[in-house]
Image (cartoon, rainbow over all chains, first blue to last red; front, side, top):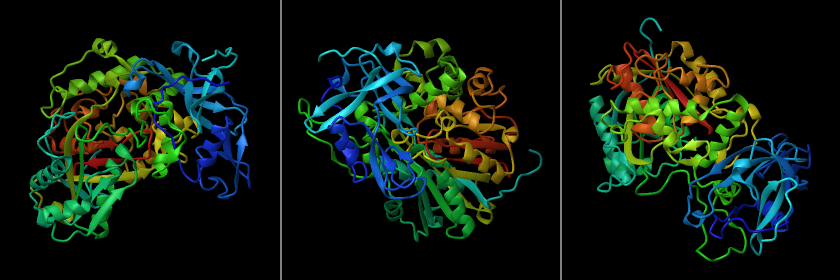
Amino acid sequence: MTGRWFPDEMPVPAASAETAGWWEAAAAHRLVVQRCDACGTTRHPPGPVCPSCRSAAASWHAVPGTGTVYTYTVVRQAFIPALADRVPYVVVVVALDGSGGARLVSNVVDADATEVTVGMPVEVVWEDMGPELALPRFRPRGTPSEPS
Amino acid sequence: MGGAPVSATGAFVVGVGETRYAKWGGIDDKSEYQLAIEAILAALADAGLGVDDVDGLSSFAEDRNDATFVAADLGIPELRYAGLSWLPGGGGACAAVANAAAAVQSGTAEVVVVYRSLCQGQFRRFGRGPGNAPAAGRRVPAVRRARGILDAHVAFTMPFGVFGPPIAYAMVLQRHMHRYGTTAEHMGHVAVTTRAHAARNPRAVMGGRPMTMEDYFEARLVSEPFRLFDCCLENDGACAVVVTTAARAADAASTPVALLGSAQGTLRGFGHGQYSNVGMPDDDYASAGARGVAARLWAAAGVGPGDIDVAQIYDHFTGLVLLSLEDFGFCGRGEGGPLAASGALAWPDGALPTNTHGGSLSEAYIHGLNHVVEGVRQLRGQSTCQVAGAETCLVTSAAGVPTSALVLGRP
């Protein structure tokens, strides 16, 4: 599912030659991690070679989009004016299922900030920040989708 | 430690200097660069040396004040060493001193000045990263082209609202709390103890602001579990230290302080720390990331945690002090909070008086180079919270990023 949770004024991600494929997949609402073609080790953020076997051959491995909260913080201070009426918000590190141990920094949305805990099961939702820019956020697994 | 330590590295700190420290924006009559120059000259005067004696300059990553310009503008006759540690932000202060020591030990240079100037009022909050925001009301069609490796890496954190270090490092503490039961009160002990030390230090930005545990808990939450006073200061100021050889140290105007040992670097997978890499092994994630640096430091210095009389532990956040105490072996993993709560960090009666100048939380945030300055003062007997008979001081740089550490000794 998709929705809008954060303002347009959020920082714009930048892509390098190594990371552009991840952002292209995200724009198509596909959550991926980079996986070494030689030894199968996954890595995130994407990089030029495999940190285990140093092969440069790699593919984008689709993950199911489920995972658990590894750690989190409830942000209470609005660091940019556009967030003044959007605090608190929750930043998380998600341990991604089926990813070979990769973790992703993201947000938990559609949840009361005080309900987020380490170990909470979550699933991906997509926020279209622009025509070719989408960010994966996460909601508690099983939350019914709400139109936005 | 018994007896007179010698400097195993062959290097000594013979001068320390600093400018006035002031809250963010408090220094507007001098540029950050002018403050760097002022601090360098003050450190040289303390050592009884002049610019003509200097042949090396050393700093660490993200310094805006290039050594080449410093050399030209000071009129250094011939620069023989210009070192910059790659260790990011506050991780590199001790490494910059260690690199200066390596330069004088190898004969590359003879008198090296290490410096840091940080005017957040003139630039902006440190650690905000290069991410930019679109103009209000304009949607951004797509990702933009990265201006460098860091820019591409913070794309995986900043667009998710990781606007500053308090947010990034709060998640490390949350994991530590989850694993070990560390509490906000444990962190509060660091904040309150450090503030009490600052009250005795006329240089401290927060010297006139006493704080109780009640004050600590009443302050607003910034990014849970961090409250306002868990976070270090944002301020203006500069400091510098002068490193030289044993032969030159013998003629110094000040009491030389020996560099007993140093270590620097990072465990696998840390990258730029929490802004870029969160995939390190679980035991390392909920730590200062300094396990390797600590082991190599104690081996290099020939002492252990039980030999340390006083410590200056990098305190960008209260909670990270607890994690550094664990990594450097003053207690077991997960026991940093109870150690702080026991009063161990408090001058004068604690087992390990820590951040006796007030640290980055209450003296000034100069990326931890002021922690080196305070270590030198302790071993000269000149601290405002002087530990009686101190012969050894541990100084550490930032936790949670590639980092470095020193042991200083009274020769």
